[in-house]
Length: 368
Image (tube, rainbow, N blue to C red; front, side):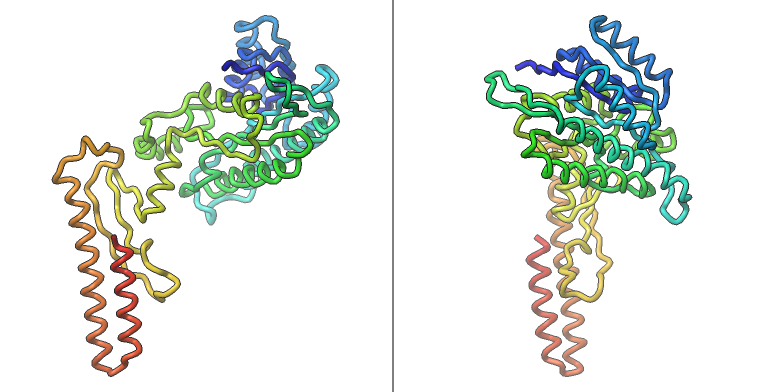
């Protein structure tokens, strides 16, 4: 089924790789009126030229503005509505990165810069987009004619809205905040005919991916199940889907576009594993019932198993390493607890012995 995205589109960060790809995809799916906002007028000219080359009938309204200014955003929305009469699709895509630094070494001015663009900018845009959409009459978005809505908003967050990476505290926080805003507004405006969703791209080869970050992410990129970076067009396709009538019953959703990266993270964390190099490691500390134990045991077992190797490619010797490691973990736990039990018995404290026995049994069951 093809997408019908005829209507007025408003895209922030329209001069960037994802913003430009999104404008081109909307044009491909029938949009003839597209407004793009960016702080870089030269980048907007590039988007205008790309659209004209694809479809000369598309009317592109270029708006040079700083979305950290509420007055500039309000004026931009007013300009779009004055020119095109409405806003049916709003794509809040503008964003910036940060230098790889822990919080204690980060300057307040860097915090203000990243948060003002990545979160405050999205909040301000969404505020005025919602104010405009709520004034609009619902329009039909389904082929059957039974479903109508006033508008759809898609915020561009990141996989770091789901998780975190070291030395990116400000960026992580800004992308988490976008998802919180998206979910709240999805609830508040669902009965008013406005859908609000987000896409969460993984690693995309765009200018936003700083060279310093790129170097640090080389091993991480190797762990993406699909084994590659996303293309800007793939993110744009996901945005178009969420904007379209095919997603008419989808709101409050954060859609990862990451080649399976977050799926791996969730799977490993849920099973007590973490990634190190090209192997998995079983972190014994994550298996500890912390509500009971007042201490941590520095136990760690190494599992020599390729992270993404399918079962058909795993040698018998490799798979046996997992069993051996788990058995070693159990034996280690039991020996430690037995030693502690003998030590405590020497002091004739039967209550402590019983507690240690219970903990040992629970640890044994948790270990596999």
